[in-house]
Amino acid sequence: MGNVNIIVGMSGGVDSSVAVLLLQRAGESIAGLFMQNWEEGDRNSPCRADADRKDAVAVCARLGIPLYARNFAAQYWDQVFAHFLDEYRRGRTPNPDVLCNREIKFKTFLDHACALGAKKIATGHYARVDCVDGRWRLKRALDTSKDQTYFLHALGQHALAATLFPLGDLQKTEVRRLAHEAGFATHAKKDSTGICFIGERDFRAFLSDYIPAQPGIMQTPEGVTVGEHPGVFYFTLGQRNGLGIGGRRDAAGEPWYVIGKDISTNVLYVAQGNANHWLHSRRVAASGLSWVAGAAPGTHLRCMAMTRYRQGEQACQVEIDGDTCVVEFDEPQRAVTPGQSVVFYDGEVCLGGAVIDRTDAPFGGWSKVDA
Image (tube, rainbow, N blue to C red; front, side, top):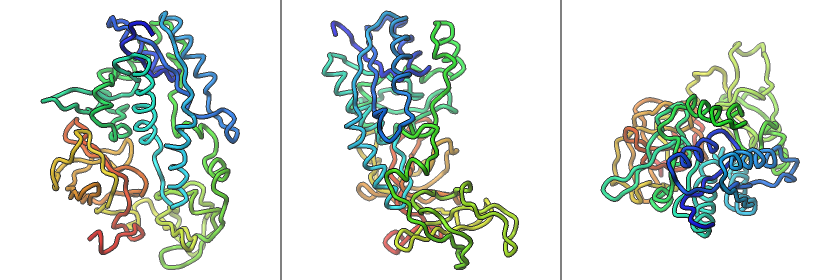
């Protein structure tokens, strides 16, 4: 490795390409590392690992820096994908990006980079880091439309102290311009969306490879059967597409939405109308609390929170008890989903977050214990 101080996680995309470019221009001693987190042959995976690796090689070659490759597929399977499947079997909707960041990109990758002699790692995430009074803070990116702190909220002090986010102060348009000027073929590459190991493939078809179909009935809250489903695991709260109910003479013309799932009876509950009250809740119980600062800010917290990516921040009160909490929002929230994360903010600073367990929506699983 020589005197390389920073190893940049190279995905083969435009963001990591510009991250490494900026660090080189700043005079840093750098190398790239390409992480393969999914095997190409896994269940006809649509992942573009080979093509992405070639793009990363081309960028590093153009800049004259070394690129290393590591296969973390086994770690990803054990630490991220197995949990992903377990959550779906429980009827929840997990967010694998949060676990991937905590366990793979900012733990396994960080450990490998340190073993190679690097003092820090860098990635193309849109976020910022600073240090105040000896504590590292995770802050929103300047480009709020691309901000990724929601997915990074589980990072702690050790990871943040060793991480650089070169794109934190840039707009996405500027990133693409810099890539184009540098002659990177990645400048026009489409941003990756969704879950990496599923790609553009139909989600239900992918999941059925691991969780067999268990057909059952779709029912209204009043107990009226309105159709059949292939398995409650394949649906998430607030989902509209794929229900196949169609028009009914005994119902209004509004679209149908998933409002609840009962794993024990294999019933999928649905109701009509985007604004139906069945999907709204104000109280959320969550667990597995993770605080960026390393400890909770007390037992009571007034802050802003998000229950899904790209949602606007919502005012709330958080009651903290160990690694669990109850969040009460000022206004009702739509389709808050168990398995997803509730992430807390104080201005531009991301404080941390937890995994949603229950809500006080009619089918949210709230109990007297939560009250």
